[in-house]
Image (cartoon, rainbow, N blue to C red):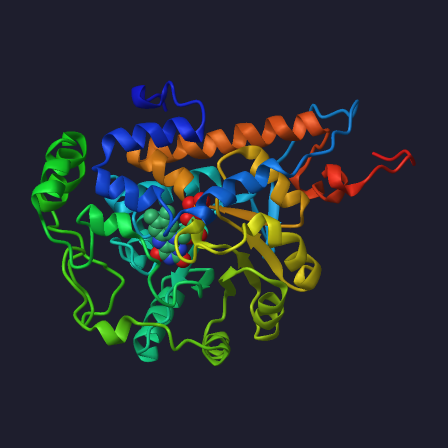
Length: 395
Ligand SMILES: Cc1cc2nc3c(=O)[nH]c(=O)nc-3n(C[C@H](O)[C@H](O)[C@H](O)COP(=O)(O)O)c2cc1C
């Protein structure tokens, strides 16, 4: 699908620039930035620069495939959409648009607890491979209601996010006047007025149709407009979460269970011991604890510890196809994309998200050809420069 705003978006950074010009500053920064001094945010990117690939020349790579099997199911690419809870603010009904782009590309889509489209609507209007991301609440019963709804709606995977037991320290949100509860002040009102494409194309359309967006997955007692404060602050805290909660979830969730926010081998082993089918190595895109290592750097240790019995997935900072190839060579089975596809959604809804996915696909494909690999399923240590040189001839 041709879309003029996308014609000159050659990479994810171009999409980011375009998203920046369309979105009010408070919203763009909420999506784009990290926490505190943004060390983790920068390090997530720079860590990729230290990993080099090994080329295998003069291999016939004229037929290349990105198909991968994850949890016994085939997907067309080794990426999936990360749960972000804000695609709906990037574009009118942006979560539906992003989910449609994921389905069309044959990749999984994860819906966040805090999304503004209900899990049932995503399932009925779009479908595809769907995973539901759960933030466990202090009131476990309310969380179990969500789990049961996800089960009834046909979600195949449950992602339990464990790295946000309290909110990350994001000072720019406060400076921008973006907080919960949201309050209009002169600065953020001018910000919205000076971004008319977002004001008219997103906010006004919501106000004229369904009203101010709400967190539609929340049970009635917690549901609220995204601009209002928490009705029941204590109920949505989750700093009392423990391994027993994971065990309890395992007992009620029949589908694939993934634990998101693992950053070391010990926690990965614990997650596997408690019945997780997958671990997601992630520092939440550098948004929560600033003093975290880059997930790509700890990935090999996690793969060593649990790779033979659990599916290892990774995210945080993936902006290039080569980043994805490196993670797969290090033993990850799939990569989640957060901001990359949010930028695309902000630029052109489904078409923009599809463009972002195309960019990853084209870049992965090119890197595969250049390193002499025909199938992403074959990626492994032999494509890493650090793996040392063997003089025995092999393919
Ligand atoms: C705007 C935004 C909102 C997010 N919301 C959630 C969320 O609700 N639940 C969750 O588990 N992770 C959330 N994340 C983290 C992503 O799932 C993912 O870990 C992260 O974006 C990966 O890094 P990347 O953005 O560099 O790809 C969010 C990330 C962003 C950028």
